[in-house]
Amino acid sequence: MARKPRDYSWPPAPDALPGTITDNHTHLESLGDVLRDGVELPSITQVIEQAASVGVTRMIQVGCDLDSARATVKMIAEHPALAGAIAIHPNEAPLHARTADVGPDELEPRYEARHGVPLDEALAEIEALARAHSKVRAIGETGLDLFRSGPRGFATQKESFRAHIALAKELGLALQIHDREAHQEVMDILLADGAPEKTVFHCFSGDKAMALKAAEQGWYLSFAGPLTFGSNSDLREALAVTPASHYMVETDAPYLTPHPYRGRPNAPYLIPVTVAGIAQVRGISLEQVCAEVSATTRAVYGDW
Ligand SMILES: [Zn+2]
Image (cartoon, rainbow, N blue to C red; front, side, top):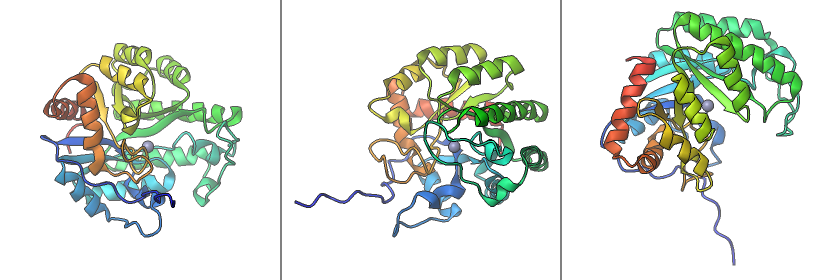
């Protein structure tokens, strides 16, 4: 008997939220990267309208390489729903510095034209873009990635992370952190250098103990689709102990599609699936999740 072919189409729209909410972290310029043949690539306007139709009225658009940071400042100028976060991603920094090595993921470094720009110049451009565009509200995603890096690249990641921390503080912007298999190292650097006042762990992947440490420091935790995966009880325990004023929600679209749509493309209109997971873990209504996340988003990024 023939097996049913896997479905790579866009998941159906969930029921609209009973309030409005912001997607704390999405990569709208990358939606086309995950689409299989024959799956339609919507325009940015269509993505934003579809999100708004289920209550996702605002998004933080994240551009974390030179090309996408440039695209981000244009996109946020054109679309009222968007504010921006820009940075040189921890897996980009070693490519600029020519120190990229093969990490536990066993992927060879892939150099693109933009990596011809030395790291210090790339960081200078991020600073200039952030200064020039008032809708850039965060520096990120920056941080550490021990999955994608060996020791040489990791040293560059640390250097780059510290430069981003300093920049966020100097500009008075929030910091969005990428932490992959580097919890202790990320926290050590934040504590040693002094974390920006608004420090947000994007796609938080720690456990309850780490969430409690973050709460002590006043750091914010943003939960993505993996919260809804059956095996991730650690994440749900972390969310359960996070203060009501310090959690957010994100898609990290087009990646990390929530259950039951894993393997299919992700976009901000799917955030209600993760919001439902949050409501269940915290034992509160969808209305309350929307209200709490909206207040937190405003506290961290301001209005736009
Ligand atoms: Zn991301």
